[in-house]
Length: 536
Image (cartoon, rainbow, N blue to C red):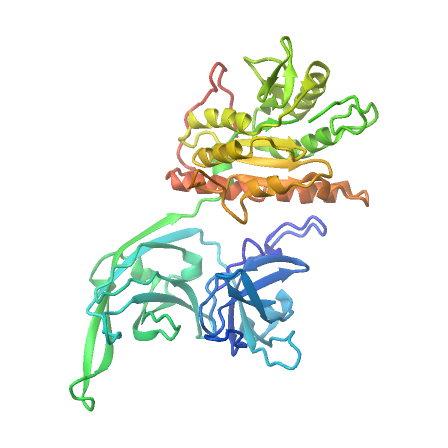
């Protein structure tokens, strides 16, 4: 099933048309009779969704089947072990076509391979309710049917939400519990709107299967329930009996009836908190920083042109004006790195732009820009370019307030040169445990391969064999937002969207992992040596 409410264009503000979304729609996807492109087994399909030319959703891979029902968001045969994928087909449609079809249920043939019948894709849309609760539940079973001839069963559960047309859509699949007749599945969390779309009496079908490596899972049994029933928790109302017929091995002509029980062990409902919840409750703080070579030369990105801002100042102003609104007092510590500083000319990788070691705070973006321009007159920009010191500097502040009362965002403006990649990776891995995020904005025309690597979207950052607890880095190349048509408003809207794309989820993930809820009153906090400042 594909949950696209956070990705589909109907759910976002459109800076071009100014339209505001009126509803959220969930699209579920199934395919039938796909091409078999694997030599020794059936295809392992996954699906890609595209909006114009940008991919915005991808399903999980379902092993060894030509008739997949996808649980999560051109169609391809994904061979993860080799990194290759075989094209299985494609189709094109609009959201209007799906919603406008009878029952909002659209079936279209897949094409794209000349002379081949590529099968069918089935798209179903349903308007999502506003329920923001999440349910966490756990099940166990006993006396399951023994489906494996030489061993016990490897059971797993499939949960289906009933649709308005009487069909069912998969909404969750548990893990496989190996080699047991009495499984206890791990607790799992699912949004209530995915389970029943806010209709507490809607039927929920649960099927139990014995896993088979060739994809032909053996059906064990099924039962139906509802959210209202499940919400009663562990009780006699949530013990479900499954009957099935067995063939006696000693007398194949004799049929026996057997019964097994599936029991709900626990059920907990919690509100799904959003980024806005934390902002409104009083959480947050922003951190800024900059610098790379001789500002008197016109080729320098720091060139002090009397008629226009240089690349660093443009990026700092554009991005800073986006993030400053999340800080109520608009006081930002601004640091430079990679320069010889007065009075002794020592090289520093974390010096205050305003020259005040005891109070590096600047008043708003204008104060930061003023401090930046003044620092260019007093310091000598000098290599190497080390990121780790300034990341560790902010991390020390964040380590002092891990109760969620503050969340730090470090903004780094860079030309892409980095001299301490290994140390920076280690600093990011350590910082991933703290209430902080890092935005890296690349200026100039250099290659930013190192910055993309630090972003960690494709491969999670690691250091000394240790993976970062979460992804905390967002990289954007500023040149991609310099609109040559002169539409500054549109280009800045795109920049704002991409700069803040990952911050909400990063903040929420930290808060949830620490059990911090937005309705808790955060304590006052003051950085060492400074008086308390209110934050938003």
